[in-house]
Length: 428
Image 1 (cartoon, rainbow, N blue to C red):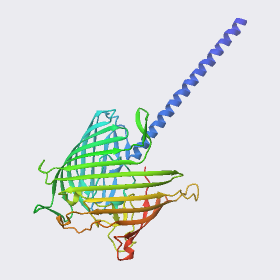
Image 2 (tube, rainbow, N blue to C red):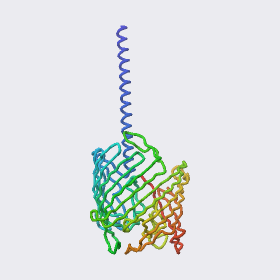
Image 3 (cartoon, rainbow, N blue to C red):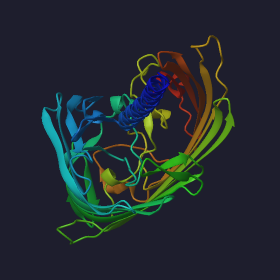
Image 4 (spheres, rainbow, N blue to C red):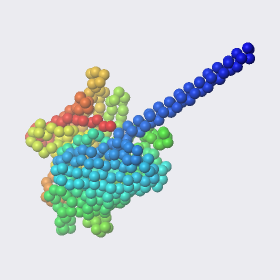
């Protein structure tokens, strides 16, 4: 009888032990599943924040779904890039869009091959047939930024068409220093009445062969190895970006020789409680025979209409709200922007409007303005000044913006110096 009871006791103890082990295993499996789900959600949100809708083998680019500008009207299409599940050694990317007002398709097709995973070194080839805003300048190394819509795009009307074939090399020199080098051949046709006079010859379209080197340095950012990837854990300031472009004539039928040097620095002081101060300095210099398409505007964002209410539109993120489109162009320029974000006003737990104080300044010049014919514009030899404020997050991400133009480019009609707009600065 004693042996029988002892056997039953051993069976009970064994059953409890196995039950506990099984329970622990189930708990561990559930924990792993939760970790996997959490990781999947984080990766999904990261992709959405970069403007991609991820699928297993292809990430759709949300930037190409719907846009609007004065030249194309509504512009819609599809684009994207293959994911690492498709291949972590090469990628294919592209887009196809259609403008309903100009009734034209635009597209780009390209691909890249990874040469070194540790340094994130890629060699890329791209063919693009699209439009670009005249006077705009982009840094190759700029991080991707996505917003629901780009405010300035709504009012832009001065575009040139370009067909560009490019070969580029992306290379991470260190976590804090990124580089990209590009060789490109472009054929440019302005969509507006414009001609460029060089050495007695009149050009209505242009061919460029360019070599560009771009560097982005973030010396105070910090990085950690997370989920088998190097990720930025501290977004440090200041940040510096520099780019040099050299156009060489008679190479692949290029028409001109010119050099462009672009520079930008951003510094931010964070005081906590969502209050901060941000300084942005941008400068550019173009020397040599340079058509207007490759020169600089100063980020204008004011529609050429008579009254303040007719000019009511969407304020940009870093644009001059009182400067009219196509009012100024420069072959050398500098802009300085100061923004101070006050601590949000806590009216309710969900309604927290934020006041932003803003001042912007621009200075520039044009060496040979007579070379540019068919379009009238001024220069920024005198200091351009505007100041104002924004009240953001008033309702569903919308807010209001007010700016006043003063100083050397103050206009005779008082109303023309004011800009009153709404803001929409939510980004994913």
